[in-house]
Amino acid sequence: MKKIKYIHIVFWSLLFFGCEKSSDTAVALSTGKSGSLAKFTIIGNYIYAVSMHYLYTVDISNPSVPVKTNQSQLSFDMETIFPYKNRLFIGSKTGLYIYSIDTASIPRLIGEAKHGRSCDPVVANDSVSYSTLKGNTYCGPATSGLYVHDIKNLNTPLLKKLVPINDPIGLGMTDSALYVCCANAGLKVYNIRNAYDPMEESTISGSNFVDVIPYGKILICWVSDGISLYDIANQLQPIFIKKIAN
Amino acid sequence: MNYTPRPKVWGYKPVYGVETSAKVISYIPIPKTVITAGNIYAYHNYVFQVEPGLGIHVIDNSIPSDGHRVGFINVNGCAQISIKGDKLYTNSYDDIVVIDFSDLNHVREFSRLKGVFIEYRFDSPIAQPPGPGYYECPSYGSFVIEWKKDSVFQQCYKAN
Image 1 (cartoon, rainbow over the protein chains, first blue to last red):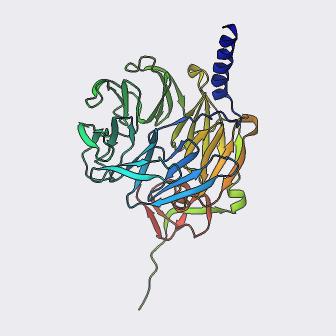
Image 2: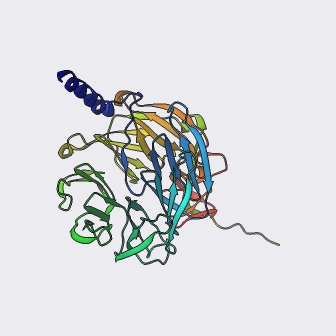
Image 3: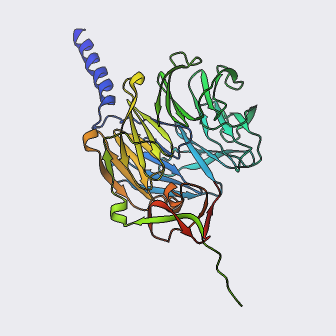
C-alpha cells in the first residue's frame, strides 16, 4: 500500500513539475495565451498564422527545424485567429470561419457565419462563440456590437443575440464572465452563466481598453497607455491591481 | 505632350537595412518605452507585448502588484508572437523565427525558416510608415528598418 502511495506521489509530481520544466522532453510543453487580436496560435505541434488572405501552417514538433506544411489562400480579409480544442476560429472582415484541424498539418474549412463587412475578433468554447464587430469604421456597415452564436452545429453557426456596443475591440472569456474592451467607453463585464444571453454586470472605466487575456486569477489588459492588471478571483468583479505604464 | 511631375510633399521615406543585419535578433535587458503598442501574450510569469515592426517588450508579472518591464527583444519586421515551452515564435518580415528565452541572460535566435509568411513581407507593420500621409513606396526585395520624415513624391498613401 505504502509503495502504491509512493508511486502516486512520484507520478503526480513528475506530471506537475514536468509541465513547469522548460527543457524539450517528452512531456507536453506548455503554451501561453494570446489576446483576442492575435494572428498566431499554437496547437500541439503546429503553429497556425493568418495574414490578409492566407492561413499558414508550420510544423514545430522539432523547434530546431520548423517546417511549413500548408498555405491556404482565401478570399476574405482575415483579422484574428482563436484556438479551441481541434478547431480554429478565424475572424475576418466578412465573417466568422471555423476550421477543423483533425488533420493538424492541413486545416479544413467546416463552417462559417457571414455578417457583412466588419472587423471581428472571436472567443469560443464547445457551444458558443462571442465576437465583436466594429460596424462604424472602415471595416464596413454591419451593426456594431457583441455577436453571440450557437456553434453546437459547427457547420451552421446560429446568431442567438446581438448586444449593440458602440466601439468594441478585443474580448476574453472565463467560465462565467466575458470581458469586452470598448476603447474609451471602458471594459464591460458580462455574466455568461446563461451563455446565449450575456447580462451586463459592470463597466470598468478610466482607461482606453484594447484587448484582454484572462490568465488564471489575473486579467491582463492592453490599455492605450500601458498594461493594466486586475484580480479576477471573483470573475465578475475585477479588482484593480496595477497599471504598468508605457 | 508636356509631363509635369507631381510636386514633392512632406512625408515618410524608408530607411533600408541589409538583410543580414536587419534580421539580427538581440535582447536588451532594459525597459523600453512603448511607442506603438501591439498584441499581448501571457506565458507563465511573463507578459509580452509586440512593438509592431521593431520587437517585443518583456514584462515580469511574477508578483502582479509589482509587475514591471524588464527588457526588449529586437526583432525587425515583427508583428505576431506565440509561445510554447520557453520558445517564442515570431515573425521577422516574412520569416518565422524561434527565439529561446529559457535564460533571460541569453535570449537568442534558436532557429529560423525563411519566407514562410509571404504576405508579411509587404504587409508587416514596418513595411508602412508609422503615421498617415504620403510616403515613398519601399523598393521590392528591400528590408525597411525605419522611416524618416522627408520630402517625397506622392507615390504611396496611407489613410490611417
